Image (tube, rainbow, N blue to C red):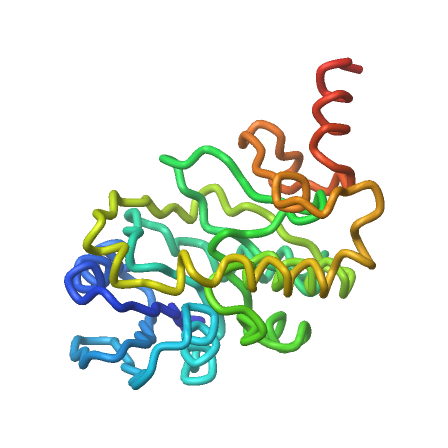
Length: 252
């Protein structure tokens, strides 16, 4: 049975406990490792704790988690989401089948209470990526430390697309977002402060290659679309959202 590693950074102890409990309940029958990266101690079954003395943002934390992981499949998770029952059922077999056709391959966890998906320069990217270790290594690694708290997921996806692979939503691998209060948000200061720097890094890295026709604006470069815009669980329009919506409104 393939081993699954979940990388899970956290600066919020109680939210982390609740997320870990949801993963336990939803993952019966799987060989599992939860790699928690946090500045506080964590002791629980199937948890490998990576101490983070001075937090550097979730992108660096996911990178640390990957480096400490040992699974055949790697899943990115956040402490403000909960795993749904059966979220890992059939996952390894599905990834193996897709990799036989598209390599490297990245899947994205589905969020039924957030019925939209993200794109980067008109290409689908997984908000919460799922990849085999083989695919991760083929694109140079997991989350990039070039980013602090944003854009590591589209960066990973563009590396997959660039390598001739494919990214798709995984409709049966479900997680649910949970409400986060002001106190919990205050515990993750990088989330609000790092956005301008991370966006500038992303544009500097990819706009020359992918930006033809796109304004250097987040609403174009990183547009969200309703789930029904997916085709075969993916999206590769390679055009700005104003063009796509004009085409869609015009019909066949």
